[in-house]
Every structure is written in structure tokens, then in C-alpha cells.
Amino acid sequence: DVKDIQSAKGMNTPPPGVGEVFAAAMVLLSNLVSHVPVQKSGKVKAKDMEWGPAKKILLGNIPGFIEDLKGVKVVVDESRFPTTNREEIQQFLDLDFFTPEIIKTKNPAAGGLCSFIINIITYYDIVVTVEPKRLALKEANDQLAEAQAKLKLVNDHVANLEAKLAKLTSEFNGANAEKSAAVNAVNKGNTKLDLAQRLISALATEGERWAVTVEQMNFNRDLLTGDVLLASAFISYVGPFTKEFREDLIQNYFAATLKKEF
View 1 (tube, rainbow, N blue to C red):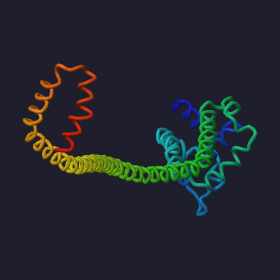
View 2: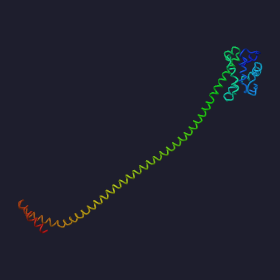
View 3: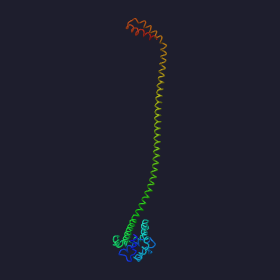
View 4: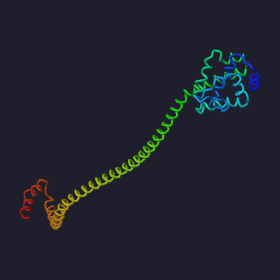
């Protein structure tokens, strides 16, 4: 609070502990702002951390001091907070009375500043601890992203090959189906050809038999008139006789005479 800080600025001799809080603030802002003097080593001189010089340097421009404090977090987030500052400020953090609860009883502004210093250093320690892990995580994520990108390329290539394989398999199955149909057609054709050849052979044999039959029928046709006359004459002659006598005439006389004469 600006009013609380102004009240601290008005103190010629601060209560015990308040001076140490502002000295810690000097160390906190050293190497970050130009108006906080440091030695070549980057450390603040002990005399500059005394109440008089520290009050003049820090509280000469209270709004600017508050902005400087706000800027510390940005520096920490950007990993630009000097390790010297962290090392030098530890001497104040180790003090038993360096707690917001105790310092606040001396001066509210100093109590708030003490709380800020403790919190920002704690935040810095966390960031320093977490930052390598964060970088390692980022590297791992980058590697994972790269691996996933490569995996995607491989998967895309595999999918393309599988599509080509499916197409070739389909074409192969179609060709096999056409081949099977052609083989079946050839087999059916061979079966029909064999049947036709067998039929032709059978018909050729029948043709010979039919030729003999036709020749015999032609011969019999020439004899048909005479046979009819003989049969008619025989029936007319033997008609009045008994069955036994007719059979005797046929077997013993008529048939024997025909066989002998013809």
C-alpha cells in the first residue's frame, strides 16, 4: 500500500527488523534496476543496505519502487534473475524474525514487503527446480510430436499400401474367377466333344447295321408277294383239315419243301 510505504519513508530510525526487510529489497532489486548500486561482484555494499541509503534509493520514487517489485516476477519467468541475488538474500531469509507476522507488527508496509520477498524467492526456487523439468518435458513433447508425425507418415504409407493390396487382391480374385469360369467352360466343351465323338462313333456303327437291315428289307420286299401267295395257297389248302394234320403238313412237308427248294 502506497500510504503504508510513505509512513515507512517518514521513519528516521526504523523498528528492529524493518531495516533488514528493506535491505533484503535492495538485494532483490540489485542487478535488475540501475538505481540500485552494486559492486563488480554484483553484490550490494553493506553500507548501501543501511536504512538511510536504502530508504533514499528505494523510497525516493514509491510508485517506481512498486513497479520494480512487480517486474521481479517477469524477470524470474524469463529466467533472468541473477543467482547472486538469490545467494545474497538468503542471509535475510535465515533470520528468525524475518516473517510477515512479526514484521507486520513493526510496520504494515515492511510486513507486506517481507511477505513479497519470501514469496518471490520461493517462486524463484520452484521455477529453478521446475524449469529443467519443463525444458525436459518440452523436449520430450517435441520428440513425441516428431515421432507422431513420422508415425503418421508411416501409417499413411501403410494405408496406401493396404489400399493397393486390396485392389490387387480384388483383381486377382476376379482373374481367378474368370480363370475358373474358363476352365469350367473348357471342361464342359471337352465333355460335349467327347459325347459328340462317342455319338458319331455309335452312329457310324449303327449306320453299318442299318445299311445291312435296309438291304435285307429290300430283299424281303422282293419276296413279299410270293410269300403272301404261298401263305394264301397253304391256308386255302389246309384250312379244312384238323389242327394236328395242319401242323404235321407244315413241319414235315411244307416247311421241308420250302427249305429244300428255296
